[in-house]
Image (tube, rainbow, N blue to C red; front, side, top):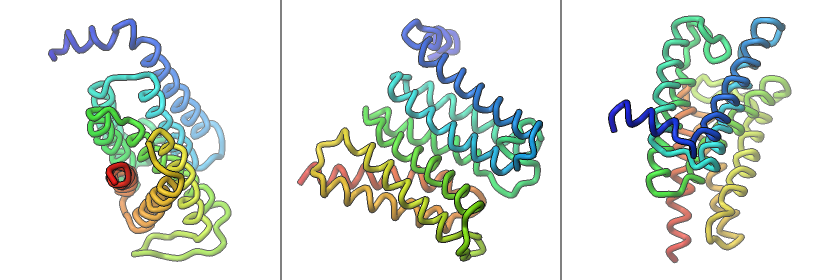
Length: 236
């Protein structure tokens, strides 16, 4: 598909509403985060988490709005480029700070592209949504709770964690997995078992990963576990 046909496809009437919603939502989200970052005393880390959590919901708009996979992959590619540029230049403090030793935002975009490419192609987008939302809500809320309310710290390979944050990661991941496994033909005990394994894997990966690579490992790992275990249980 050449660029002319791609943009014609992008502007097709059936896609205008979902694409408009995505652009308006992301624009409002980043705009609010930037405003908070520049005009208030809110920490840069907290504004990053607002963007981190909020932007993950785009996967639901893409799924429910039936946005084509190639558009999702292209958007993830553009987001990855912006994240890399923002890592070195202070264009969007709400995404990255200059010199921050993490490529988390880049890995975030990369995971989005991988999961859309994988699960849109087999018409099972709920697995992509599961992986992304486990990462955005689970990891995002774990950081907020751990930073502000964590009273029992521990370290894993130099990563500073708290039991409160880790528990938040597990239970949020469990809740998301339980909800997004509903479309599958699973027995209740199978759904609970798969969700618990997903939550354990996601929590483990989030605890050990460094330099922001958890934003790749957690969503892809969670989605892969959900997909392969559900395939196994549906087959038996």
